[in-house]
Image (cartoon, rainbow, N blue to C red; front, side, top):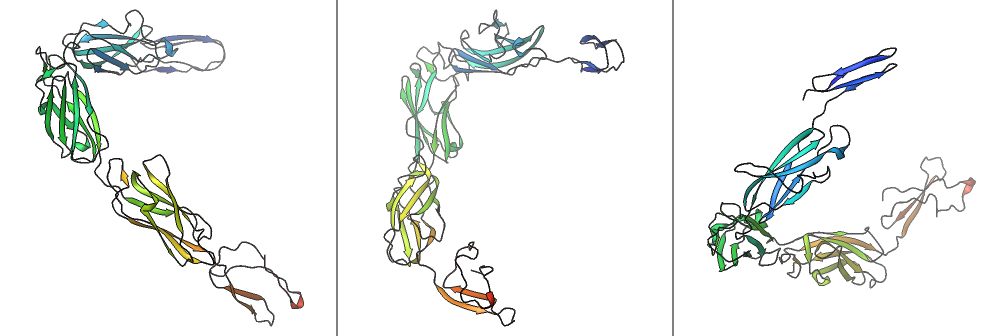
Length: 424
């Protein structure tokens, strides 16, 4: 269709304006000044996809198509099916007499027999039409087919081998390793090591290579047949293909990433809390896996609990230590360490590797002491204009103004103007 045309007219009185192109026209009448325009749109073709979730079944889906003009509800869809070898279109999904509405974007079909089918979806808007197609292989429902390829072990796994149970719709023969392939990141370095079984159930075993997903798929080459000689999925390779379940292979041991203070330091309060973060979700974490290293305190602190920060297994844990047993004046530190123990494991059963010394709290319950108080004549005019107080340790930020300081016995009416820290 040709590009839209625009014609603008400005007049002072009544006018008649004809807008035209070879594709569309509009006729406007009226009075006064203004502009007139007309545009020709196109009807987009739906994008069509088709899949077969099982023998004798096809599922068709398509994208929505906007109306070039007018209401979107005016767009409807007609679905047709044909054999790919020689198209002879047949209405399906009940669309021959009742088209699908503009917001009905999928349907299911049961084609006659197995084989490759083409599905055509035609969008209709008034007298305009636009079509898209999708192709799918459908297994013959009367032929044998794969019911499932299920994991025969637990996942995640850190084992050296993996196995699957393959179930067919009926007893079959000709099943061997050449009918299967391994896929996924976990297939790197893995090989199929054996196929056993008979009738409608078989077991396939493979070695395990790299970490990642390891999936077993069946690739149909018509070598698998039922007892009557009918090939898997019916005649033709590929129509009996099946994707199996996947193992999550994980043979990498977790590590402790950090043991970080969850509160301020230095502190004179309790409890002392740390956040312990592992490289991946783990379980089996217990207070006995940790130790507290204290120095300069009159009594040892006690590790009270280690709890998960989320549903187990989780990567983050909270460790809490009590300092209630510490008496008297103290100025020291408390550090939380984790030892390498096998009882902490990830979901695949890999034991924790390595240990880590955590961050330390500076724990201080000793009051600072005033060491000296010196009066100074900074400007050397014979009068005191500064008093310096020195303490035995660094103090925290000072924001109290002149409180709690006062001047006593001040000659000549001197007053305290400010108090500020010098260094620490």
